Image 1 (cartoon, rainbow, N blue to C red):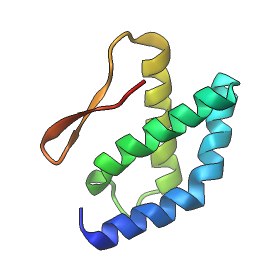
Image 2: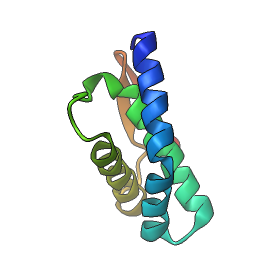
Image 3: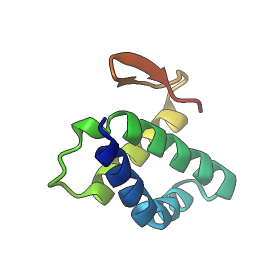
Length: 93
C-alpha cells in the first residue's frame, strides 16, 4: 500500500469509526466486545485495503467486514486469517 493509501485509509477509518462501533454494539450488546470487533474489522480492512474499489462505499465495505468478524466470532471455532501482502495474517479473537 502506498503512503497516500495509508492516509486515505486513516481518514476514512476515522470518519466511519462511530458508525462502525454503533453497529458493533447493536450486534453484541457489550462495549468491550464491540471494541474488539471494531479493532479486528480495522485490522482486516487495512490488510486488504488495496482490494477496495475507491469508487465504492467505504462504510458499507467496512460493515461487511464487521459482519464477517461477527459471524466468525459467533459460529466458528477457528481463528480467521487474511492475506496481507502475500502473507497470511492471523486476526486475534
